[in-house]
Length: 305
Image 1: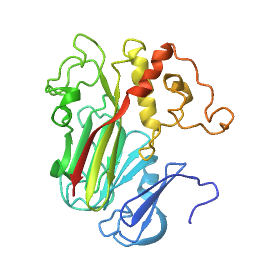
Image 2: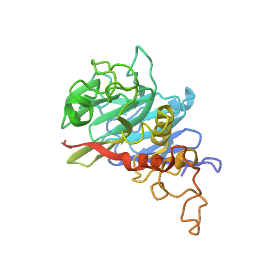
Image 3: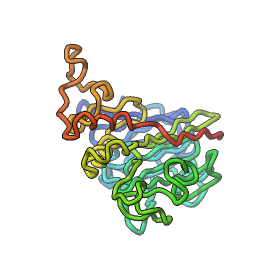
Image 4: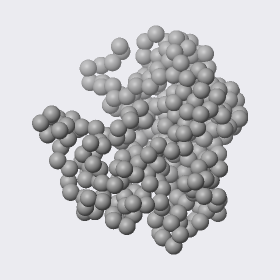
């Protein structure tokens, strides 16, 4: 491997016969035998047996913290909340309003008017999803069971796909009315939301794609815990929770809101203490742990390629 002793690999990602390494410095290395659409991001279409640095990120000083791969395309998020896509766009999955391949990473600005940051990204076989940082709006593009050759990002329609949770008028993000005429609050007369998107996830194979979301049901804890604190805790959880992990990571600052068997044990924990450090007591008391019981996977959609 062409890595110096100072380079530590923090994350890996792979598509169909190609893959990436992300270093502790935010540098990206790619390799693979399939680079027919430029999915390695190296500016050419030749296969690469050994990992090569994607130089353009270093040149502009961009630190990449997350990469997700589709069948022949890639989407990356930087530490500044910017996203880049490259590779095949034959189904619109790059979001650049065309169907031509991109051989090098190309920035994608979803909200040009407000310049919002991206919180999370996900990739299906031939589509991509992104979740915004401030209000958890979700955009998607490409082709799956519910999209057809969508070459630019469009907002996910919660009212259409999750009417039981978000109602016919559309979801509410934050305390104001939604952009699509959503009601003032999910709980009528309240300044809080009943449901909050924690993270998005997409799994795929050659024949199908499954898109899902982890949604927190806050109805049981809205009256017991400060709402701002709840959102802050969920945002922290979502940003640290790897899409490939079923159990949430241990985060000391918010562990008091969860039952001891919910979070994965922290580094350094021993079998004697049950695999978990003592959690700080929640001001919400015993009812505060009901947040753990309120997390559930929602919005799963089975899609055919």
